[in-house]
Length: 126
Image (tube, rainbow, N blue to C red; front, side):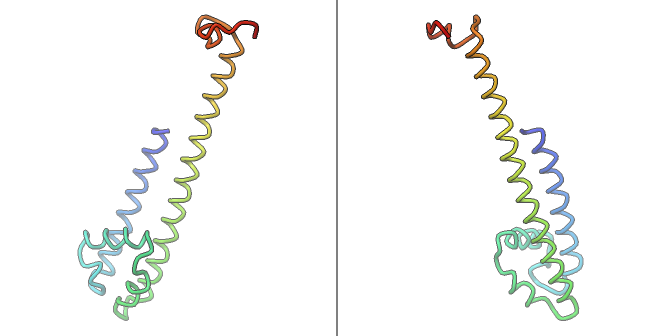
């Protein structure tokens, strides 16, 4: 499970950093919430949770208001899909690992041998 999670997390960080740099460079002069790289990252994290979406767009000055709307809408859409795919991958991986372990345990119980649980428990006649 961990080997598939590491590249996903790395890609998530790169895309997030790209959105943060774009917001800082383009919206920084027009909105105080994007005035520094740190405040831009904080704003994007709060936007992922749905905080102040309308207020952020409304506070952007007129020349960049349409870009701000498109930028924030795209960011929220992309990271909603990222979160959904991450959840689906986590559940699928957990199911695959559980399924493999169940098969190993099931076949180990049916085949008596030195490592079989039936020999350890003293169960005979299976």
